Length: 160
Image 1 (tube, rainbow, N blue to C red):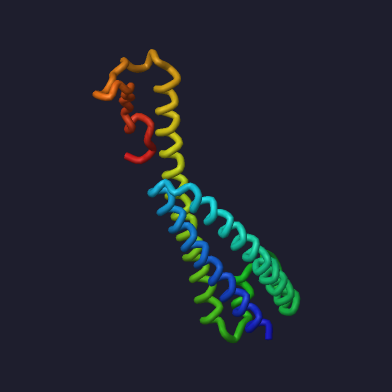
Image 2 (image 1 turned 120 degrees about the vertical axis):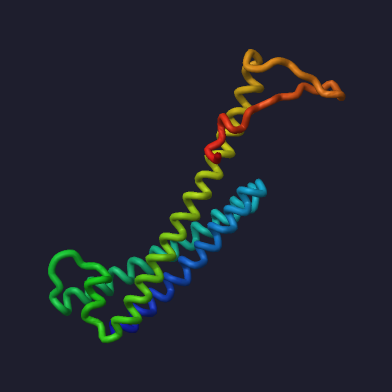
């Protein structure tokens, strides 16, 4: 009984984590296309997914705790230790490994998105510095009589 409950919870967590992977990929596209409105929508959708996964995580931890009490498991109690007492070790181990890999992918995508955000912020700061401090550049005007601002993006970008 506990094995089926644990497998069901892990399958649900895996499904949600895969949804989060898709949201992170969508966020990356929004960052590259500078679609702030859609980015905000995706963030709200992702927050709901994180709240949902917290519920499953709480339930999973409760199941793991009950199993550890049933089998008198001493020391650190985690999924890896509980799996040893299961008759369906292969399925539980595979699910644990899949979830671990998905979480690693989420971390990688999140890191890439953070780099994109930081780079965009640095470029914005560079532009503001150029606009606010007139001593940092010489005035140049285009054919229409508008002031041109020349910025070396490489100075401010975190992406090289």
